[in-house]
Amino acid sequence: MDQLKKILNPKIWLILTALIHAVVGVILDTDWSDDPQVLIGGFLLLTSVTMLYAAFFMHGQEQARLAAVIAGPAWVWFVISCAMGLTWQIGSGDPMEMSFATAIPPLIIWGLAALSGLLHGNFQDLMSGTDAVAEISE
Image (cartoon, rainbow, N blue to C red; front, side, top):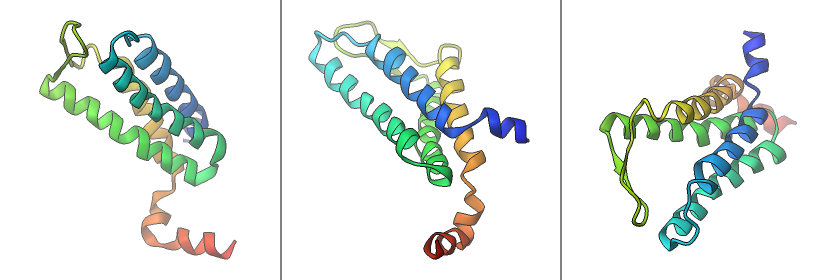
């Protein structure tokens, strides 16, 4: 378990996911001459900014919890989108159907980022109320 926790360091997974999301998921896929794509791409880049903030300006359990809160819902949305076979289209490009086969890379990346947050977030202390007492006394 200690080796797994070392591999799933939230800071590393926040940075890795933010960069992959920004470069591969948004910047390379966006037609920057198409206004709707620029609007959506710009908005999607905000997720990477939030993740990089959490990676570089937060520490410990707070960093891990934010990793879980950002990456967990993204992973769940990928699963829902694939299960429903949702299609999406930006501008005049061809519609793309979400499927588990095509979504394996983002499912792995977002899933590992979320798992890193869950492993290091110490959510049991948060739920029991002992976490707040420890922070106030520091």
